[in-house]
Length: 102
Image 1 (tube, helix red, strand yellow):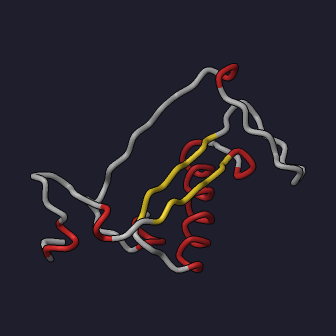
Image 2: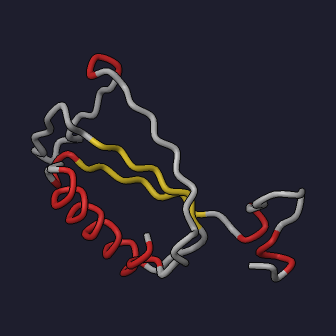
């Protein structure tokens, strides 16, 4: 996120959910991708990003997970949901992107 989307170092809001293998099904959608029990599904909610920054994110995420966690790129699946500045409030009932605080 930091490199691909150029977000600040402390801009981190992460939720990690672990599931038993029997509680997670991730087929290959006909692409011939062989997955293991180590699959990681990443769901990102973000402000608009360029196509190139998304491609960089996918690449860097796979590289980092492989390098630091031993997760194969074939076991990484990503979905990005885009929303607007009005869709964010970081607390106090204020839309900080709209007020200019962020």
